[in-house]
Length: 343
Image (cartoon, rainbow, N blue to C red; front, side, top):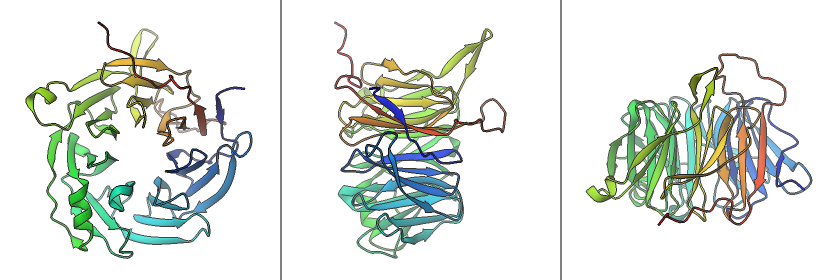
């Protein structure tokens, strides 16, 4: 039996996000440009089982689980942040931005839901106070969001990156209205081109970010000179085609929750695993049928979900049959483990 399979009932338009439940490696949420959020039991039967589909008024750009496996939050091009009761299917609008909402993220230790929009704001929702939210102004349009145990990293246009302390954001969420929360740190991306994705290390030490121009940068939170001297960037997701170096966007990044290594997914249809500390590629998987748009590991680190959809990198608007798929891969015990240092 293969350790990788594709879900049998996939969305009909490109996939924007895949997300495993916090306490289950079988429940998976998928959001799509086809205006739906999908809930699967990926191990119920061969090819997984579609449990329910939740229709939205516009394309859905992100989805995450909330306090348990029956609560989800979605963000999309209707400008709204929604709570979905996965049992009843009931949807509640929590807040409305003034442009499309790109990302939504739940921090369990802080009972905090954060949404990031192209209107250059964050909305902070303290889930113990339904119906209320606070707004944090950003210096630019938000492209990607990721949280470590104590920090929130917001990657934006103009290559700017804001790092916030989650404790302070959770405090600000308790008072509705405009929140004056200063970033803990403000940085500029070390990459020359637009940031596509950001993902925090599970050990709270730092984060990785990726660009539209086939690069990944790894940085540490610690502001000391010694720590900052460790940061580096490297080229990836590039292919030689007819003697030319073709460069692809790196659309997806995800850290392994147990081993602290990370996966990158690119417009070349490739997923690679990297050891951030020892600066090495661990492995590269066989090419997927289209651009890799999103990656998520299950909380126990045993499974990885990979959302594949045409990224139109070749300039064609056509979506070939079978190009929109979610793949589930079961990882062996050592598959995502970092390599020991060379002596």
